[in-house]
Length: 345
Ligand code: AVJ
Image (cartoon, helix red, strand yellow):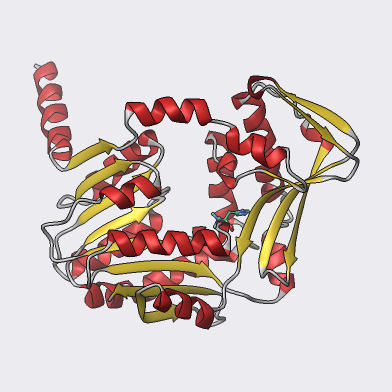
């Protein structure tokens, strides 16, 4: 009967995938309970200080994640396509340098770039073990299932976790080695002292001889940088403004999006793009579930993101000082984006 054929197909195929998939939730119930209590503290802290700030994590609700995917396709936004090209060119070299290893990816997101690495390891005949780390269990599950369908020998252990927790709890591997991947220039969102702390956590998570693969956006002419964050189609503006929509929903607030505008510029002293939302008039916003009233003066801004642009020499020295020895660095022909493979000494 057609039912039994259907059952056979749907039982065998998914079972094969499920046997290669393990999802662990490191965000334990106690932590979830505290995170409920502390949820929004970061928004309160940012909005009650001068100048006002909000953490970039508030960009990424469903709509925000979609808008970010669109940004990656924009003609002005060279970052994703440049890093992808570097990976395409050097993935085999990376795989040869590390040898067979588990790939741990912090902030896995859409796995387009991960696939380039998996392909290279596969071509060299290495077993494929992938450990994506993301706070969203839903995103982890759907992207893992897609990967498992496409790579029939792949094994995935997905960690629903913050980076900090995952780095503390990375179980040792039965493969010879591990590579922690932090690509996409997410490092740019961290202040210099936050990135010191982050590198220390990477160092602590690795065994001697294991690897750290880092992708960063590099310093370049201001005009190129500012265009990338002020695209002509206004997708970046929508992405920035969407943060207020997200806060309205999450914290029962009444930000009026038409009363704010997108503002992004390159701060040449700090070597960072700054994204702000500028209040177009004096106004008061209620954030009911946070019990917070926020006053804005006309033209006052909220800084929603820093996106640091790195100097390769300085970054290599910093990694070296923190015990993550740069083995090899790759860039594109314009030197716009950098990929660094480091090894714990
Ligand atoms: C995901 C942090 C690398 O800084 O370019 C894109 C986010 N912000 N356009 C970046 C972003 C505005 C992006 N990172």
